[in-house]
Amino acid sequence: MRKIRFFIALWAGKLLLFVFKRIGRTRDDKPGMASMRLCEDFLAQVAKPELTIAVTGTNGKTSISSMVAEMLSKQGLTVSYNDWGANHHAGQARCILDTVSIFNKPVKDACVIESDELISPINIPRIKPNYMIVNNVARDSMLRNANPEYIAGQLRKACDGSPETVVIINADDPLCCFIGEKNRKVYFGADYLHTNPFENIAKDFSVCPVCGASVKYEYRNYRHIGKFICTDCGVATPARDFLSKGVSADSTSISVEEKAGCFDYPLISRGVHNVYNTTAIVALMRDLGNSPEEVAHLLSVTKLPEFRETRHFVDDVEVICRVAKGQNATSVSTVFEHLAKDESKKELIILLDEIFDNPKKQETVAWIYDTDYEFLNNDNIRKIVIGGPRCKDHYLRLLLAGLPKEKICCVKDIFETAKLVDHKGVDKIFILHDVNCVSRGHAVRDAVIEHIKAKGGKVNAR
Image 1 (cartoon, rainbow, N blue to C red):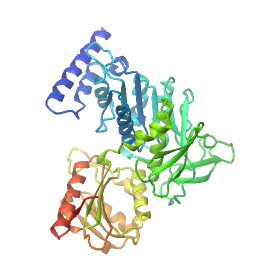
Image 2 (cartoon, one colour):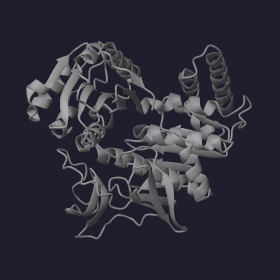
Image 3 (cartoon, one colour):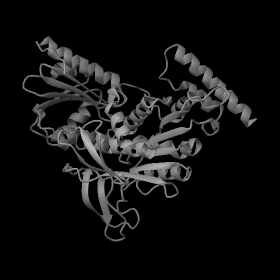
Image 4 (tube, helix red, strand yellow):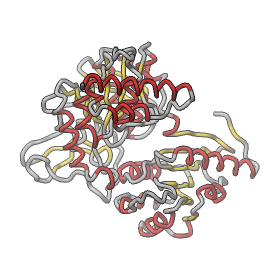
């Protein structure tokens, strides 16, 4: 009976997937949802490709999984991957449905599965991937993810339930580097990157996870990520199998040290978090048996998903549209710190309401008080325009951060924000939008470009 139920779920999911592809609804996880509803342990019974890679962690999942999928494809492998970030039960089932035939036989070489940390103890033991990348654990949505220690515990359960999985893990993150005691682990990290990280309001890690004593850092690269040691019990950053030794002067490449030597690799994008993302990808691809030269070539022809960041030049002003994950104090604070350290003259449009005018949902604004809006109190930031239903909450938070109110504009209609920026005398205009509001962010970006063109600005090809 269990087998019959599974095949009914498989055929129903495959039929829906076929129909959805024919009508252009390729980015829809309803086929996976149907299979999961018809067979609760569908993910355990469905066949997996020869290579299955799961990617999890608070920040960087989509960037890493997208790039890994593209790199494998460029090697000639057939790969299934949900490129729109569907990382819950239905999305994962949808991804695997695309890798098997109606007879439950693998028809693709690889599958790259983005996995939400919260559901990992359920689905990772069912999927049993060959590899699991754990990029970091940090403060995230209060509604969904409670606290970092809880999420680390969930990931620990996931690893314990799939001991045959190779875990590629951030050794510099004390919240997650100790999980996976039963697994073979490949550690990655970074030497001191001279980032001079700011002090954050909220501390994700302050005491030893073993004895509760204070922890001493030899260095931090950002937030709680760095080389640490407990002076009481000796718990410390594990030895890194892949260690980024530094960033090139032009910020386009990194040197990664490993057992076979030290090799240079293209950096996927500027920013300290992308040093870690790139090093995680290098660790995976090298462990899969690829040469340093092959990995470097693949990185050079692979790009971040466009929805993460776009750049346009209008009248010599760079208009940058960038994701800043709403309700996630870690992600937004990291972006704010990057903007503060960018010495160019700039104006900002902030669109960080995850839920726009949805009467069926209610979000908490408590996360903005864990977020370092103080970083924006910087002379290089000439004006901040806030848009969206929660704009006054962000306005209050900026005032509490010490920003003068004459530098802040507040408007509920997000499309009105484009009319409030002034491109004269600035080098850059940043539009920061939530990960779930990509289309809105891009629409505002286009409105900003049109606003500048209407004032006589010309689009520059660069």
